[in-house]
Amino acid sequence: MRGDKMKRIITILLAGLFLAACGGKDRAKKTEIKAETDSLMAAYHYSDSLFAIVGRIDTAAFNEFITRAMAFAESHPQDTLAPGMLYRAGVGSMILAKSAETVDYRATNAKRALAIFNQFQEQYPEHENAKLCYWQRAIVYDDILGDWRSAESEYRDFINRFPNDSLTPVFQQYLTILGKSESEISSMYNVH
Image (cartoon, rainbow, N blue to C red):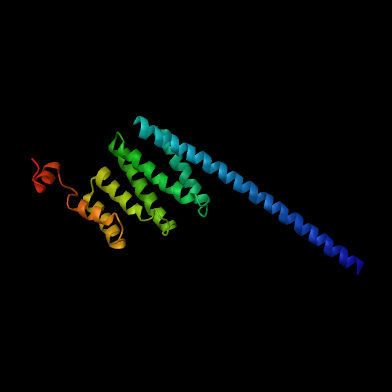
């Protein structure tokens, strides 16, 4: 009887030590993820602020952020910050594409942005930014690639999926001028 009691006490102590060790690992992992997200946000803010405030693009910094953000979303898909990181990676790719000096670099970053927004919608279909991926892809097709058919398709997908959204009337109106030159738009509205 005494031996059984001792075995139970040892088992309880070992279980407690195991749980404490696991809890320590969880805390360490959370601390590691927090440091990683803080570092990623700092990298994004540096790149985005430099672009927004100074109008200069640090291509290397944006590319590093995009690569790290995509890796973070892949490594920690359930983390609450993963969707935001992935979405920002798509926006960063759009910025790089729009400001590219060569056609190849523009196309490469535009395709990467499209792929990221597709991945975002697949991984996080219920996230608030999932519907904005239609809009972002439309911008890539329209403003960056000049593919108005694909842009129109993205706008129409948004309109059909979200008929009551506040952006729907804006997109419906925009479709009337999509792909038209300034002179065509001016003549539509009798502006001379």
